Image (cartoon, rainbow, N blue to C red; front, side, top):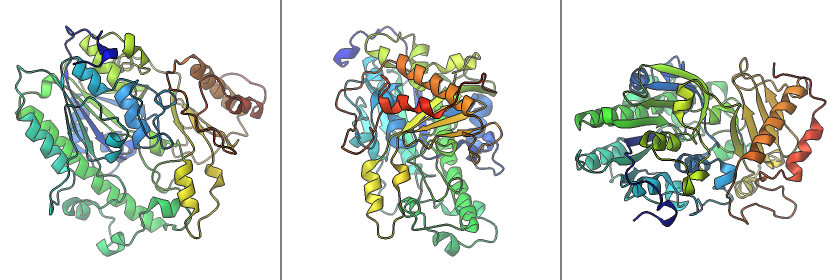
Amino acid sequence: MPIAPLAHVNASSKPLNVVLIVIDTLRAKKLSCYGHSRPTSPNIDRLAREGVLFENHFATGCWTLPSHASMFTGMYPFSHRADIEHPYLDTAYPTWAEIATALKCRAAAFNPNNWIRVSQADRGFGLYDECRKPPGYRAGTRFTAERFAQWLATYRGDEAPFFAFLNFGDPHLRCWPLEENRRRFLLEGATEEEAAAIDQKPTRSTAGLARLTERQWAILESLNDGCVADADERVGFVRQTLEAEGLLDDTLLIVTSDHGDIYHEHPPQMAHTMNVYDCCIHVPLVVRLPGVFEGGKRVVSLTQNTDYLPTWLGLAGVELEGALASIQGKSLIDALEGETRAFAFAEDPCPWNELERFERMPGARDLRRFHRLLRTARTHEWKYIYSSNGADELYRIAEDKDEQTNRIDERPDVARQLFEAMDSWLAEMPTRAAPGLVNTAPGKPATFASASRMARWRGAIARFGESEGALS
């Protein structure tokens, strides 16, 4: 039965089959179709030629839980509040799987990532397969794709449509691709012994206990290329499976990532958390559906991972009313038709528990600069990062894609305008967050500033001089 808040959903709606493939920790810039110089992604490239590629696509957070919660609810993190200090998705917010079930779809997940289940984001799936590999299995996440194929083989076209969620974790640290792609992509001149000796523990790097050389970073990037190629092969397998079952052209196929990673861009930080840099939030998005998302188009409009659910609902003719009024994303069809946001938004609260664990490590560096809430407004030209500790950042992203030159002092007018635009947007954005989820531990800044403009958030205005005009 549909959950009570979804009882109003029109059963006469005709939802499409949808397959959502999330490749964990995949940076957009690591795919050939996004300009990478190495041939890491022939299968995703093929989907981009058949469908639509979104060039400026951004996650709402820099790690698994908040990003998946945004995908599954269409809500931003300041509303769904699922993050490291509150690692649960509140039951008040209907998930994609619950909505699909209310629309009489079959909902199935094939996901070895523990965060989805422990955070209650798995609600609504009739089948939730954690894809635990049998002993001796050495084919990476191909097991996840194979489990999906086995399930799909039981599907018949006269049955209900389906929502299938697949998670491939190949590019996630520790990077060690399967043998074929390891040999193919490993940095020329490097040995497997040299590669295996690289310290890939993000905790040690962030705590200042490990520093990689330029050569080690280059080797690690090459290992990551191999892992991306492994994941790309899984995408090709899923496409082939859908085609063999006669379902490919009747399925909304979405390929994306939950977040990226810091490698060498902002040392000594490594991996993902405690940042909102593009290397962590600029993720790929390729969508295929004949008649709608087709023709190899490349969309430059700003899009976010809140947009998948309203896209699917819009195609099904479902109105965003009642319980679905909480959805804050926009249909990707709007972007396809040329509409764009004023800016893409992401945030990262202070992960107190994680920082305290880092700080207890013998020899750890001073980590107080990470005691902060981060929020960003990212346009095509500029990127402003608000930091609750006052260390704001501003990058001319069009010419500084790796965010290396902070222009906050030379262009406070731009920073102020982006702050005010973000502040106004947050104030207007409806939020249904349950009370008690704001971290107000003594002596610590709030984990989340509310949309009602906390004093700490509003205090940022004093950082900027008088506004001088346009964002130019």
